[in-house]
Amino acid sequence: MKRKRTERTGGFTLLEIVVVLAVIGILAGAMTPYVVRQIEQSRSESTEREMEFLEEGLASYYRDCGRLPDAKIGLAALVVNAETLPEWDGPYVNGGGNLSREVLLDAWGAAYTYQPAAAVQGMNAPVDFVLISSGDDRILDSRWTKKGWVLDTDRDMVRTGSTKDVDEGWRAKTEELFDEIVDGVERYYLDTGGFPGGTDDKALAELLASKEDDWNGPYLSGTASCVLADPWGGRIVFRACEKVDGEAVEGRILLSDGPGEPAATVKKDVWRTGANDLVRVIPEASLRGLLDRERTVVALRELRLLAGSVYADNPLLSPDSKRLDRADPWDNDYRYKKESAYSGRVYSFGADGEDDEGEGDDLYEALLWSPSGGGGDDGGDDGGDDGGGDSPPGGGGNNGNGNGNGNGRG
Image 1 (cartoon, one colour):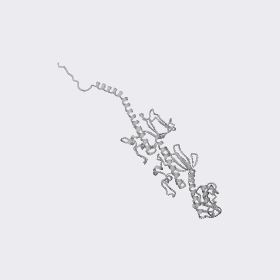
Image 2 (cartoon, helix red, strand yellow):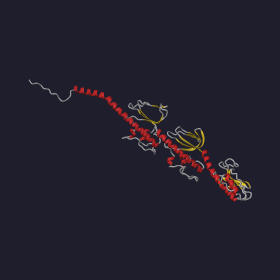
Image 3 (cartoon, helix red, strand yellow):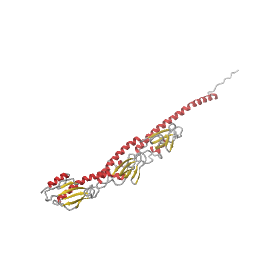
Image 4 (tube, rainbow, N blue to C red):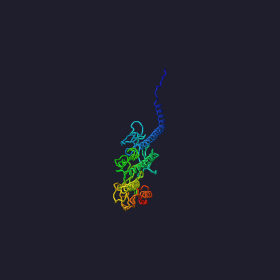
């Protein structure tokens, strides 16, 4: 009898396949949570890094453009100059592929939430922006209320940013610019007798270039682009004011909106400024006082010269009262008033332009003649020395302060 031989083929039996699949299933089941955790951890770290880059990009955008992107344009402003801002120098974030899409989505493919100038509950001061990723569950757990954001930092990834350091530097720079403008306006006022014409850009441009006859500028250094806008890119306000924040002051107001939205309001030259505004007031009364003092010095010098001319033209007797062919610094005619045959005065009505009969702000130089008809130089010189040092021969000094009699004998 022949013995039967059976040979096994090279394949697996059904039982073996089932066992292998079971083992694979067990291993896969054990590994899946670990793999998922690793993937989520990777996405979380990637989103965290991306949010750091976005925060740096927002800071760079702010330094260039003077403000953060508004909520409507959002983070796309970091890669596309949607508002065609001349100061824009982006893109402000790097990456590959479609940057416009990447900058808007986190690693889970959900859109970032971005809001500038946001109030946050639990914080005393508003933050300059809030940036939120909804995280691995793709559900935004932070919420916006009428009192501001309630942030859920346990389930959402949150970053709050501030431009405080940049703003402080720009505030100091704006104050320095205001100092220069105030100084320029004062010198302009002293030269021309008034404030620059127009408002804002037009008025400040008068400090750089003008066709005014008395203009002796430029009264500011730099170019118009350097002085007509603040570091935030806003226009500097230069306008008339009668009252500022409840305080009566007539003159001109210098104002920058500073960081944030414009907040100042004005009605009939009455101003109410905002918390972030930078303000400088230039009272006209103080400038007018400086101008009048400067003009007074000029008028006193001219009065002495005019008194000398009157005496030279009339060496024997006081002439009749008359207007003199010369205007004082306030554009009123100098006058000569005869007081007696041997005395008189050359005078100016002063800043108010009114004849105060030698009182008030009237300015004058007294003249005395010798009854002998000449040779009064010695006495007159003594009188001039007593009365101010520069009076003409026979002069009695200004405003009655020279007591020399001018009675030298011929």
